[in-house]
Image 1 (cartoon, helix red, strand yellow):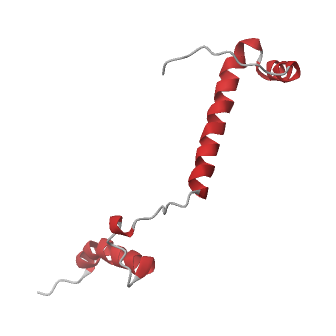
Image 2 (cartoon, one colour):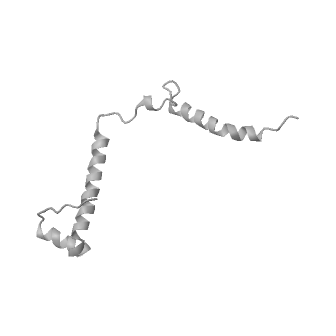
Image 3 (cartoon, one colour):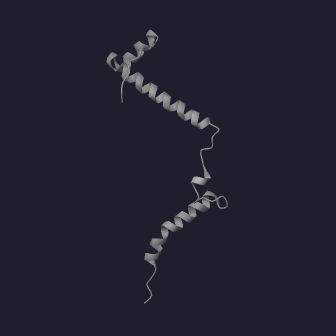
Length: 93
């Protein structure tokens, strides 16, 4: 990732508190870490408050509208367990 030098104006007291935590040499890294965390938090809040639906039923045909999620999960479990059931059946011979 490329780096860009920027000029940021902060209150003296805040800079002193940051320096006390991470030292003068750790100031930029600290500010970058905090800024990245805040960007991530704000994007998440934006996503959570968005009016756009997050679920597209067309992308999940295994969960049909009639049976709902519970029916879809039961069907997937049955399909996943079928090979085990076949191995456990007594052979007729």
